[in-house]
Image (cartoon, rainbow, N blue to C red):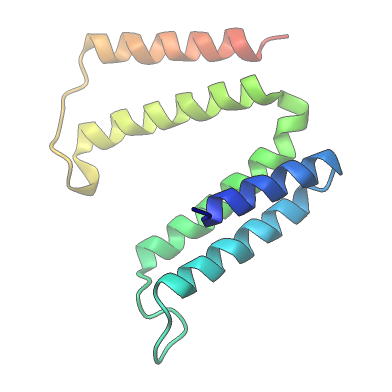
Length: 129
């Protein structure tokens, strides 16, 4: 079964071989927009099913893809992945602590702090040349 991710990944590999990262960003945006409109066709307004929260998520996703494609050549894939994973886990701890997004609040104990410190150490070791 073909979906939007298959198309974007296939074209991304093609564009990376041709050294055209901006083409990947544009194609990704167009494909995901197309599949969004097919899945839930617009009625009276342009995107009646889209909330502001989802729109911001889409913009941040496009920003992430742009930054990742621009920096992967200088940082390297392992460094970029380490930084992204560390950032996601750090934000997850903050979301847990404050109970954001309807998640039950969780305390930040010594083990979580130690885990975050080790995560930063791991990122430094991976990024260091």
